[in-house]
Amino acid sequence: MSLPHPLDEPEFYDHLMIKRFMAWVIDLVITLVMVLVALVLTGFLAIFILPFVWAAIAIAYRTVMLTRYGATLGMMVASVRWVRLDATRPDQTLALWHSVIYAGSMSFVIPQIASVAMMMITPYRQGLNDWILGTTIVNRYIEH
Image (cartoon, rainbow, N blue to C red; front, side):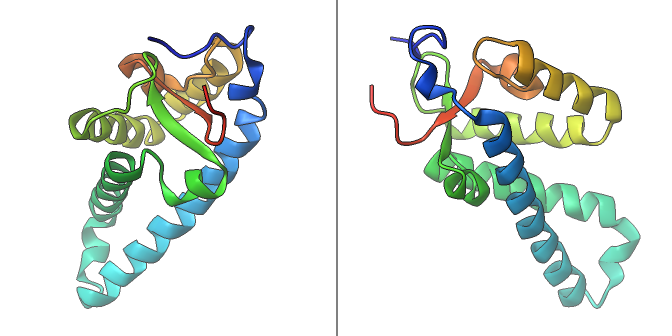
C-alpha cells in the first residue's frame, strides 16, 4: 500500500504550503513558551546554553507529538498529519530522526531554503527531512 499520487488524488496535498507554515508558527510559539519556562526553572542559568536547551526541547516536543499523535499541536490545528510514503504510521525511532534532522536543517540557511524548494517541487510536497526519511505531510481529514 502507498499514498495516493498527487495527480490522482490532489485533495491529499491541497494547500499544504500554507498549512505547514501555519503549523510551523504555532509550534515555534509552543517551543518558545517551553524554553521560557525552562529558563525560569533554571534561574536563567540555561541562557548560557540556550541553543542546546532550545534544540533539546524542540526535538523532544516534536518526537513525542509525532510518535503519539502523528502530528504536532501546530499540525493538528492546521489539519495535517505526518505519514510514511507507504501510508503507514511512522514509529518512535523515525519520529526522533525526523525531529533531529529537522532541528539540524533549521540551524542553517541552505537546508532551510532547500527544504522549502523541495516542498514546492516534489510530487508529495516533501521537505528535506521528509525526503530523506520517506515521509510526508498530508491533509488530516481525507479518508482513503
